[in-house]
Length: 274
Image (cartoon, rainbow, N blue to C red; front, side, top):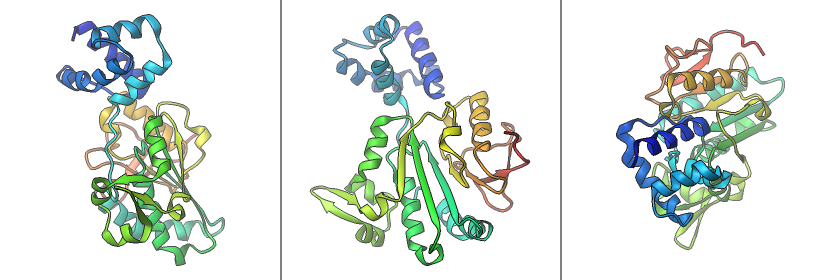
């Protein structure tokens, strides 16, 4: 791949998704964009780059962006964040939200929906405690393809085997051919929307809990800071932010601070000006 083509694709991806690619990731660009070239009846990345420069076709730009954004997810991924939610975060919210009995949860960069559905199943299992409460779970992703898959709630055997306890598979899924369909009971508890984390987040409303795990690792420092500060504006003073194990707010933003004794959980460090 020509250096100027690589640079052009990198700039495009950074602007549209925040994804930062270094020169050692050229192989990744080539492997993921070749199918896009074929889809558009182009012979290779050189022709794809030329088409991007000459046409700026939004559908083509979207295909390129979706091909490059990572869509890795699994049910109850890493498990501990969900244990923390059940033992620490949910009891706190139930105590603090007694007046309005409403909790809003955001699964940002939700991919194919496993994280949001895991939360929905967890909350369903806590049903007695939540009688009379309104729980909203919103999943958003840059990829329209992933949002469509999440809404469908249809997963392969491999996908349901990754992290999903057999008891929950039996309780909340039914087999459809060689795939597994999540129940309407759980599917109806989650709303999915196509949304870019780099855009204006205010239309999404305020969230008591935000899961933004394993997303910031793909951004440069300024973009990480921008995203975290935007998320902070969508949270109440006692809201909780989840980040991935390799992510932190330290040295990036002063809007959040680590939650005492809870690895990967963060709270607002001061009132956020709106």
